[in-house]
Amino acid sequence: MKKKRLKYSIILAIIIVVIGIIVISLKNGDEIAEEVKPKKQVQIQTIEKQNEVSSTLTASGTVIPKQYTVIRSLVQGTLEYITPVGTDVTTGESLFRIRDGSIENNYFNALQNLNQTNVAVADRISQAELGLNSAQARFELAQKNLETVKKQTDQASGSTKDAAIITYNTANNTLNQVYTYISVGNITNYDYLYYGISTSDSNLLNEAHLQYLVSAEKYLAFFGEIDEDNLVASLNELEPVLRETKTILDMTVLLLQNASGGQGLENRNLANDRVIVAGYQTQINQYITSIQSSKNALTNTDINNQLSIDTAENQLALAQIELDNANISLQNAQTSAELERNFAQGQFDNASYGYGNLTLNSPFSGTVLSQFIEPGQQVSMGQEIIELGNLSIVEIKIDVDSEFAKGLKLNDEVLIDGQIKGMITELEPTGNITSGKVGVTVQSENADEGLAAGDIADVTLSLNYQETGLIVIPINAATIEPTQTYVFVEQDGKAVKKTVTLGKVFGNKVSVTDGLVEGDNLILRNGVFISENIEIEIIK
Image (cartoon, rainbow, N blue to C red):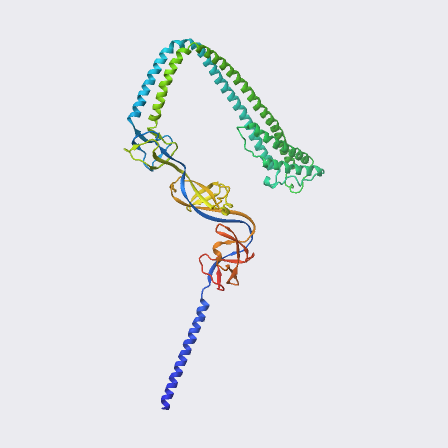
């Protein structure tokens, strides 16, 4: 019995030892597993205050051609031909043809009647017209004289304008050379080259520096583009810039006459500068005189041209009076003939309207989008025949929240369907009272026909806001729950939850008014599951 108990005791001891070894192994295994457990890899955004916010917004709209029309029939008849759907047509190209025997017969009968009436009228008045030949010849001579005078005045105006344009452009180029020479770096820096010059006349130096600032400001504000339709106005805009430039050049010449170097001028040849600046001074003085001469020449040319034209027109008026007097004797014969011709012409015009509308030409270059009738079918007046659009330029109208619209402006570039460039061409000034939406029109050159009329396209807008001292984060970095809104930040290699208060939404971004401070490392979720206090690894 004792041996049997001893045997059981040994077996029990062995079992206990084995169980202990297994427990220790499992524990060590867990520790090893915990040691090698990988950290969550995350990206972060270091919080900084900013004064500008850029984000994107995507909205959808229907693609429509910028040029678009539905063409209706202006006559009735049988459709004989219609341009197939998808065909590209040019301006003036025939779109369809309608046949109607009644309209065609009326046209040809009216044409024949008009031709016969014209022959009869010409025969009756041919004798009476012999008396008008002399007056007609003088009238035609006066007309040719007027045409000649107009050509001569046009040539005179053209020569005067050409000279004025040359004067304007050369003066403008010289202005650019002057300010490039007497400025340090870009003229927009307002840095006068000779401000540090050594001179005994400090008052002149200060006055020259102040005058430089005035002259440079005047020059930079100058538009510099000539209006060839209003040359006098352009010359008037240029003249005060030249006069201000003359003043700074006069002062600079005086400064350089007695200058002996100075701060920043050690490597300059002042003698050479004196010659160059004096040369610019002479040129500017000449341009001031030339500008005044050009204005006088333009004014005098206009006056002289008008006098010449008035004289030629008076001569033509006198010739017209003589011709009218000669026509008085023909009034009776011409009146009856004219009534007949007008009646025949009226009949022909009415018939021509219907005949001309049996075919209709394209009002613009584009593509046939659809047809409303097929060849062989009857057409009634006003019936829709064909739908035409120019797909080279398309528009998409979308609606955005009024708050988002504040980040948009005309001519902003947009992206359509992620690949086609466009721009904003219309932006409603105020939002709809009911919906709070602002209408936005986007236009795109569709040369490769990547957009089809009627398609629903996604338009991605770039929103740009100017705000001061904002903390802005991606919307998807925040978790919004009924009781709290929070984000995760990195602290000592772990994810730490922070409760935040959100403010204004900027497209796919949102401002944080409380809960984050500058320097916080915000964890960007980007599809990674984050829980509090897990260890994380920051990746770029």
